[in-house]
Image (cartoon, rainbow, N blue to C red):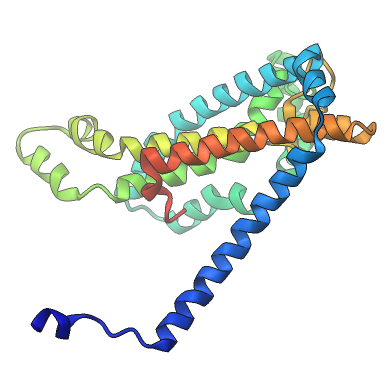
Length: 275
């Protein structure tokens, strides 16, 4: 009887509230599924064969893969020390630094491409980097990596900070009292405990870099066999009327995004809740 007495009472208002909440979930999920299914039904076998047989599209796929992997690796190299510093240290101007780190997440992606183009083509430093040092980025594959890094690195940094925030500092303090240096505490305690969140952030960063479009069109263009990636291929195919081919490539990107999101949830989605 006591167990029954302690059971929460669910009246009709609770049931209506639950039904309303589930209604919004159902409508949103159904909308996404209907759009994807519509795209899939519109694509014919000829479009799929074209995607699989075209050397230009396969080259764009390869460009998307290797550039996104390189940019993600660079982003993670930055994200681990930056995430740890933002999580553990307090310094003047930290609020401003936090805001700047998050800036690429909130401003339009086109701004990245436009800013890079102006920097490398209109400033003395940018021209010195390209002309004197020989590091050409404008309309070059290296520019793809740079665009992807600047557009997606904030996701890796923020997820790394969140992962380190979730590590109980008492474990680090115990390691320090046992004779570990701060580096030893980071290497043996903090990093292993935050590893899943960092990996999840890396996957999210890769997915963002893989599907990047706007900055690339401005900064590196979409030259077939040179700087074309899958996202810009969709634009090129659609612009010449090959809508079925464009949708087939879009479905490939959606499938890759679904795998990435699922992997994030399996590896360490909880670390990304506060992004």
